[in-house]
Amino acid sequence: MAKPPKDAKLQAEWLAAFGEPTRLALIRALAAGEKTVTNLAREVGAEMVNVSHHLSLLKDTGLVTVTRDGRYMIYALVDAKVVGTTLELVHSSGSKVFLPLE
Image (cartoon, one colour):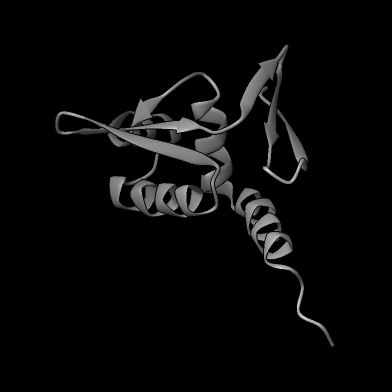
């Protein structure tokens, strides 16, 4: 059996990132704009170490970016827009995911 192309593997990893409750909560929290780990942990009600772990996975799949602002790491969604009460995320392959924000 042939191996799937690399882009199919990356797309599958991107889609799989939505399948965990804490990551889903983080994605929804970031729909309102960029935030620090501390702000995200407070907002989703999780320990900072867990939030950092999930953000690392989201970064590895290309769902979030991170920038340093002094001693703070600021996280933001990649290729995302809010339309009404729905968050639309787009993978580089063109795949889209729509998440309700309410």
